[in-house]
Image (cartoon, rainbow over the protein chains, first blue to last red):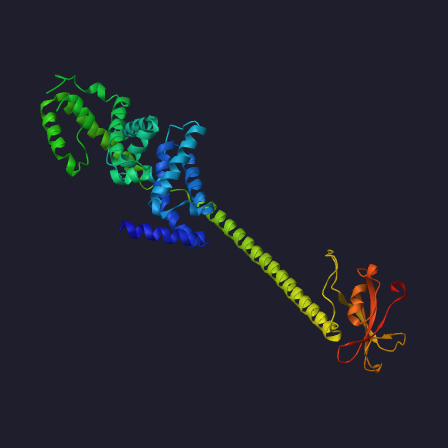
Length: 199
Length: 223
C-alpha cells in the first residue's frame, strides 16, 4: 500500500514536471494540510506556515528533479523541505505566540457541540493556550517530535522517516520533550517527592 | 526499576514487542512508587491535552489563495518552458539547415572542381617520354613537364618540329602551354646548354590527336 502510494506520487510528480497542472494540484491536495499544520505548530504563525507551504510547493514546481524516489517517500522529502523552511522562518521572524485558529468554523463548532459551561470552556481554552505556548517554547528537535507524534499522531516510524532519523532518536526526543513540557507547565510541582530513589 | 530508570523510559504509550519486559518492570514500579505514579498521571494528562490540541486543529488547511498562487506560478513556469523549448527547437533546426546547406554546397563545389580537373586532364594528357623530376625539390616545384592552363587551337606556324616527326596536320593538333625544365627538352630530342638545364621555362607543345608532342615552340625569353 505504502509502495503503491509512493509509486503514485512518483507518477504524479513526473506528470507535474511535464506541465500537467492537475497532477500538481493532486500532490498539493494530498500534502498541503499536514505540512501546513506542521509548519503552524512549529512556527506558531499562520502567515509563516502559509509561506512555508508555498515555498515547499514552489520547490516542487521549480525543481521537481530534486526529489529522488530511491531515497524515500515524497512525504518525507516534503517534510524535509518544511523543516528547513521552518528553521529559516524561526531565525528570521520573531515568534508569534498566540496561535489562534484561523478557521472560524472550529471555534463555532466547539461552542455549538460542547455542553460545558462558559467557565469550563474558558478554563479549557486557557489550558490549551498554555500547552500550545509550552510546545512553541520547546527546543526545535523536541518540538518536532512532539508535533509529529503527539499532535499529528504519527507513528514513530512515520515520524522517523519525516525527520530522517532513527526511531530510537524519536523516542528519546519525545521522552525529553514530554519532561520539558511537564516542567514548563509546572505539572511537576504537584508531584509528591520521591519516597526512595530506588525500589 | 529505579525512579531514574522509570523517568528515563517511562511507560511507553505505544510499546513495541521489544519493550515487553521493560514495560512490565515500569508497571511494577508504578504500583510501588507514588512519585512516579503522580508523574505518570501528569504525563497522561499532558498527552490528553496534546491530543485535544491536535484534534482542535486537525481540519486546518492552507487558505485557498495559496493554491491559486501556486497554480499561477506553475502555469507561468510551464508556459515559459514551452516557449523556450520551442525557441530552442527552432534555433537548432535553423542551425542544422544551415549546416546541411553548407555541406551540400561544399560537396557540389568539390564535385564541380574534380570534373573541371578531369576535363583539363582529358583535354591535355601528359607528354610521353617526359624525364623524371631531376630538379631540386622546391616547395612548389612542378613536375618536369606540367600542363598549362590554356589549350589553344593549333594555328600557329613558328613551331620547330621534333626530330623524327612527320609534319602534323595543324587542324588535328592542339597547342599546350607547359612549364618544364630546360633539361627536359633533351628528352624531346633537342640539344640544351647543360649549364642552364635546371632552369624552368614556358614551352608551347604542338600535340597530335594521338597525344604525342610533335613540335615545340620556345618563347623568346627562354631561348
